[in-house]
Image 1 (cartoon, helix red, strand yellow):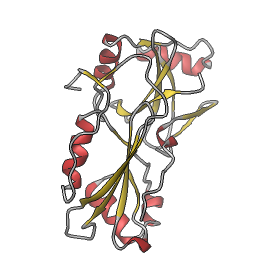
Image 2: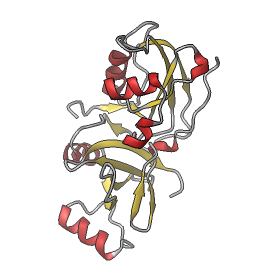
Image 3: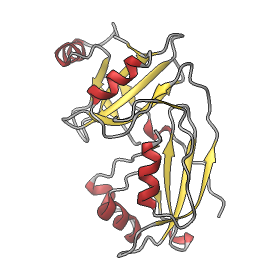
Image 4: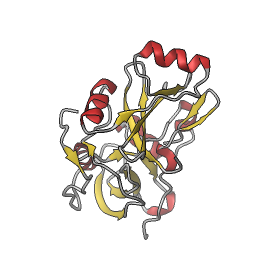
Length: 229
């Protein structure tokens, strides 16, 4: 099967009124998110760690209990056993192949197909496909890694020249939340699900970067360039 191009908008946060929905560092050196070395039959877990260490984002999906219940047997095993939330699908017609997705802030996408996905086995790489970036960063990003504390991510971005952006149009409740957090760049937080929060930074030429955190500990979930601002 030829790998299909899959929409990467699942990493973007849709902020309407007060709600947020997402259907998607020890190393702080500047990174262009080049593809690290991958190999056929390489353990997917090892490849995943290597990609995240290189600044690629696993394109997480929110697998609620209800959504997990609707998965097929292989998909359910991958999610419950390994927690690989970047799983796209394990189609029944694909002879046991599963597909996973990674992205970069500038829109480069990587889709990996794995074999050995059945119970008791470790998924391994069968093949992969890279789609080119959709636009260019106006200034370099520091090396970011998912699950790092937001305080570390913020410091790295500021040191790399990305400035926090305070939004004067926030609602009173969101403004109060931003003031209490000590992070004026905080845009909004969801009150349900994984507890997503959205933050905005700006490059010198005005290009905007949206940063998403999750959980009470505010760890990095994803980041992407705002193309419409």
